[in-house]
Amino acid sequence: MQKRDIFMSIVIAIIIIFFVANMGAINNFLSVHTDKTIEFGHSNIVVPEAWNTTDEVNLSSQAKTDNGITNNYTIIDVWDDWPESSITDISNAKFASMESGGFKVLKKENIDLGGINVSKQYYSNPSRDNDYQWDHVGVNYVFPKEDTNYSIEVHYFTTYDYNNKTYTKELDDRIEDMIGNIHNKEYNGFFSGINKIYNYIPKLIFL
Image (cartoon, rainbow, N blue to C red):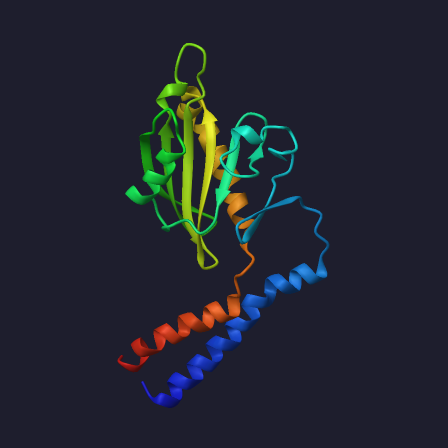
């Protein structure tokens, strides 16, 4: 490939990235947002309609973060700067450290949610599965977005829910919506795109 062609390709790519990266900012400028959001780390997320923060309904003690999201049945906690983009033993160690009654992996899979490759894992806290308490199952979603890694955890629900395909599909749909409404406040799409082009240039030169 000629150097001139490489240069023109890079310029065109930069222009495209600039417009794509700023579409969100343009939309924000043209619209008025009334969605309720929560801040965590250097990110924010929109609280789903008809859901509340755990602070609002006095369930903060049951959340694993400073302020979770709840429908008064399950609680959703979200973390940014997760140490990996998919679930391995590193994530399992962190998940297990948050379960005082034990941590048992039930099922792990990779799924596509809104065009993002998501690592998904169901787990059980055995101590919650007894004659007086039946909600012992949770599910974790780990994925990369906007130059950071995120983890979303939904806890707890019952074995009946876990085996109910309609319920688990509704959970996936809810998380897909949330992934679309989670944003890294430090993310700059333009510079992120430029960095990717910079890292790709050596591959073009040696074609």
